[in-house]
Image (cartoon, rainbow over the protein chains, first blue to last red):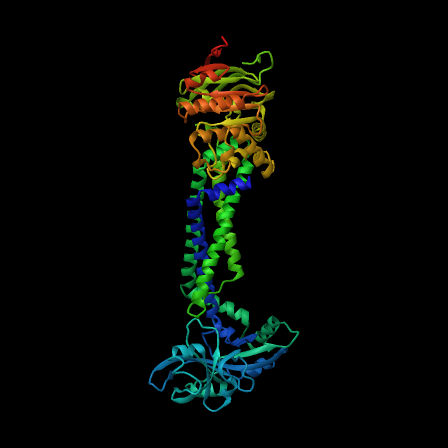
Amino acid sequence: MNYIALNMLFGDRAKYLMLLCGLTFAVMLIVQQGSIFWGLMIWSQSSISNLNVPIWVTDPGIAQVDEVKPIADTSVDRVRSVPGVEWAVPLYKGLLRARLSNGEYHQIILAGLESSSLIGRPAEILEGRFEDILQPDAVALDQWAVERMGGPDVMKVGTIFELNDRLARVVAIAKTQKSFTNIPVVYTTYERAIRYVPRERRTLSYVLAKAKDGVPVEEVTRRIHEQTGLGAFTAEEFGWKTIGWVLKNTGIGINFGTTILLGFIVGMAIAGQTFYLFTVENLRQFGALKAMGTSTFTLARMILLQAFTVGLTGYGVGIGLATVFGFLTARSGGLPFIETWQLLLLVLVGLLAICTFSALISIVKLARLEPAIVFR
Amino acid sequence: MMDSQTQPAAVRARGIVKSFGTGDTQVTVLRGIDLDIYLGEMLLLVGESGGGKTTLLSAIAGILDIDEGDINVLGVPLSGLPTGKRTTFRGQTMGFIYQQFNLLPALTAAENVAVPLLIQKIGRSDALERAQRMLDRVGLNDRAEFLPKNLSVGQQQRVAIARALVNEPRLLICDEPTAALDGPNGQKIMEILREVGRSPSRCVIVVTHDSRIFHFGDRMAHLTDGRIVSIEPIVREGTA
């Protein structure tokens, strides 16, 4: 009977394609929007992931990573004194304007790393040597700075520009994850960073730390918070905190959520309606099968097989199209597109729900169908 | 006609009443039908439109619940069977030929013929082999791989006959089998039905309006206004 069910499905090519298009469109829309949404969320915490340190210590009232609330310089030593902390280093992070030799101004994020360890440095260097930022007036840029501040002809190793009327000489270009705001990042040492910025009473943005081997990082963050009164977060916690802030304080969550929901509803409506029509138009055939001795259970199984076949085909095609879209748009870094297995699983569950719902409507119709219809 | 009335009826209907609708809009379609049909015979059910022929046929086939009365098919009381068992019984003992053929358009002729066997969970290759043999018997051995849309209406009805007979049913139910066909095709179909469908171990019920095919039957029951007004043997030339 499976053979008959599949032939009935594929035999009505126009309806099959319409069903397939509806489900493919729904899957593609949900996966595409979901992946872009998740990409944006990943971008929103790239300030955390680019530095790749396990513990972030800062003002307890901080809401997200880009909202810097300076803390006392003594915080570094206080964190170092907490049992279970292997090391703790200062980090400066702040907004500044860069003036290029051609007179252009660009807003940049200045990141000051502890000079003896350079903890928080980017993992991948595209050009130059990152250690050279220890040289006088030396800074490193991320590749987005090169892109946004005039391109590789203007911003390259050896380029000199000004930060708050002080010289900065590019010695390295690093590869980093793009940030949500896409503001270029300029790396230098902590000591030099606080010389670049106007004098403030407090200059320390974060204390970056690591737990000793064998001590759970969550335990160490708890101890830091209890003993210093500062906010201490694991990188993961801080990332989720940042994502939570973005969702709450920007329209991104509602915007993407609405699109995803619409994709789901449109997909469900198209699939449900088309599948129902498909069943209704085949009622005589189903009636004939019922008259010939096919049980309602078998007919229900046939309908479910048809629904899941078209659903899973639509799922595959939809994901394929969304992936191609993501590959084409995200490879240049122009659009955040991160397809996760969790999203794909969620879409699969949603799609199976759509198919089951559509099939159930048809099954109810078939269960009520009197096979005597074939004699009318 | 065989000397069948001496044996127990294959189909025995007593006091069949069936109404549709409720209250003021209720219409009683069958008003106490008594009918016996015997193995080896072809019974024609004739009468005016709306007289209750198709309703009676549906009731005998067990695809329509009746309000009153008893229907016994091949010794089994249909009215007392639960729906699921009735469906299985129907699949095992009955074959259907419809006015509109009701072939599955996506299946080939052979696959369509194999459907009743697939319903009985017979393996696909066996089913197709038996379907091919049945198509040979109705003269469509060279059309097995054709889709219904590529067959003439006469050929489609022959496929439907093959499908109805492929599982060797003991009760063959035909609803206006020639209504969609022109005169010569109708005659041809009835000849095939008589040659291939009739058997001492099977009874055939044919609902029809088509007076040109009356001579193919053994007996004819006239239904008017929900009642059988007469049941007469059909006298063919040379048999009177």
